[in-house]
Length: 277
Image (cartoon, rainbow, N blue to C red; front, side):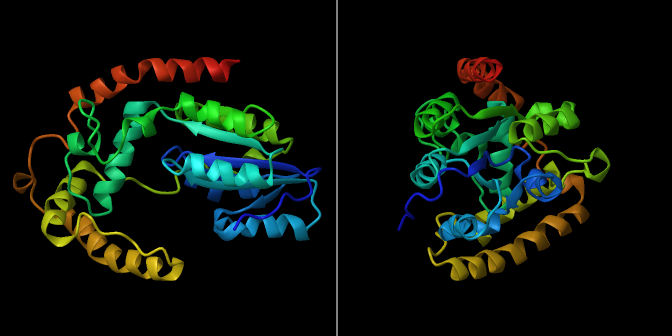
């Protein structure tokens, strides 16, 4: 059940991801270092807990962070129903790079489909639908839901000039941070291609490919933990597997990524133009 709108005079900032755009890094290594704003971690997001925190505390400004991708429209609607005055921060990543990272995450999590089964550019019958790879409509949807345009940043900016990227966020928030206090190393290290190829092969026989986690929070946590144990055993033990035992073809063919990049080039250019304005 949605909470009623509360204390519209408070300044609310909401970082909505996307996933695989440095979100975990920002949540753990940057946002807690900000001065002049109350940061509410993503663990406080569920069941509108962040709303209750804001109602019961007396800070001038709040920053809430969570990561979404295909749930973005639903969650933006929820946030806007409570805080229509919220100012939104969203980080985008070029389509080919982003979908490749999303694919690798699914493989790491025990799925065995090929990249073409994951994103189908011909018939749109893949696990990931093409509409969920269109960023510009997301920006339009956010702008309609709130009273101001979002701050649009790009993942490649974080990689190329992290301090400038972080300064853009702090300036938007009207906050500050000490450079010396910010650790620029990634929060998580990615698994290499060999590890992902091995687990993709084992997943076909070990894990149900249509398994659905429970909607009950703690039961889903237990299910994820039980599924995680064999996955990580495979991922780390795969380093011992001789290279000759691993398929030589790439996990994702470069020509497939090129097709994605070309298919969504217009959408990407629209986002770049939107951010420049």
